[in-house]
Each structure stands twice: as C-alpha cells, then as structure tokens.
Image (cartoon, rainbow, N blue to C red; front, top):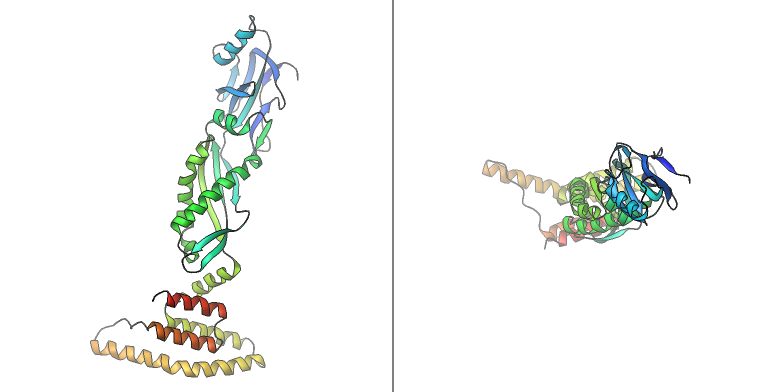
Length: 332
C-alpha cells in the first residue's frame, strides 16, 4: 500500500464494528495527512499492535498538536516531521446495533417447584453500542482487519445464557409463571449483565426475552391449565373435562363416538348427582345465613377420589392424572 494521504472508511453492510486500515500489517503516512471520521465513528491509532490514541468525528489533519502521541513516536525516529512513518488506524462503528440475537444452543435444566427438573430453551434479542473504543479494540479486536457482529455474537451469547440461568433460578418457581415474567426477567438480566458488557467497552442498551420454551409434554400441561383456568377447583376441573370429552365425542358420531358417548353418559350419571347435591347444600347454607358464603373446599381425600373417578372413566390422560395428583398431595 502506498503513502496514506487521506484515511477514511465506510461500511456499506452496516454489520462491521471495527475495520483496520490497512487490513493487514501497517502503512506509511506522515504529518499533514487527512483523517476523516464519520459522525458514528471513532478512529483508534495503532502502533506495534496496540491502540495508542482516539479521535472523534470530523476531518482531522495529522499534526503534532492534535495527535501528541504520534508526535512523540515520530520525533523519536525522525528529525523531519514530513518524513513518512508507519501506522495503523482502526475505525470503530459506534452506532446502536439493534439486530443482535441470543439463544440457548442446548436445553438448560431448571428445577421447577411443581414439575421437578425440566429442560428449557430460551430465545431473545438485544441492542448494544461500543462506548469505549480503545478498551474494545485492545480487549477483543486486537490486530484483526475486520471485526463484525457475527464475530462477537457467540461470545456475548455465552455470557447472556450463563447469567440468565442464575436469574431463572432466583426469580422463577415454576414454568406456569413464565408468561407473566418475561418483562421482569428481561430487566433483571440487563441489570446483571451491564458490568459484564462494560468490561469490554460495550453498553447493553436493551435486552428482551422473546420466548422460554419447555418440552412438549410440559407445554401441554401449561396449555391445559391455561385453557381450563381452574385446576385448583376439583368441581370445575371435573366439569371442564366432562364438557371437553362430550365435545370430542360429538365430533365423531357413530362407531367409536357412540361407544364413548355411552361410557361418558355412565360416568356423568354417577358424578352429576354428587355435583348437584353439593350445589344444593351450598345454596341452603347461603340461604340460612342470609348472605353469600364461599363453599367449603373438599378434603384431600374427596378430591383424590373424584380425580380417580375421572381417570377410571377415561376422561383424563395418565399425564393429567399424575400432574393433578401431585398437586393435591403437595397441599398435605
């Protein structure tokens, strides 16, 4: 490369964080040369692979007044300030990078208070900006000619996943609470990782948790609870499962559907009197006291018996039976 009279760089892709001029080795320039730094850039001068000085946006003429570090270096080697000297310039893009993604490469174990250990995957996005160009170049870039977002994405992702594991363990008790905690988890994660990013001259501006996904069987249990909205109430649970089973049978008339309807009718015939009796007793108690009164919650034994009846009538699956049984027993 010849003598550098005008030093500048523009990245048309928008994905480069740093670009060195020249990309390999160093090049000759001299006092009086022009350095053009765009509004979103900073320029770091290098000598012997180490960043020495930083210039901000504008057109700079290399003189002993605005670059005293270079003046000292040149003066040690030459008496004539017009004599060429070798240097490297790294342009650092200081815009906000808003297309950064993160996600777990493999499922991470999480101890759920209700379901035991489950494997979770997490995904999201974040925005960042280089705030200390000299620190960033000296700690991460070094002498590389190009340094783009793809080069740092894996490094930052490992930091994010490690911190997020700690935050999930501290703030989340069960995956059933996930949907309501995405914003809180994002805020907590950002606060925790600010120092980690800052060690490399980076500011973590925004951090978002887009999804935390459990295994399919756990997601099915979450969907079941969400659609029913009353797992803690055994009567409503029984009504929901019965109505759901009748709807499924109605969609399949004849053959197996009739058989299911017959079995379902028998099961409902056994359970409906009990449900009606409980409702009548509650109404009588409320009428005697002259004001509404909350119905007494069935005992653990009664709830387990009702659950067993639902299971025997094939109104719930093995998985649903086991999840609900554990939930009832946990109250003992």
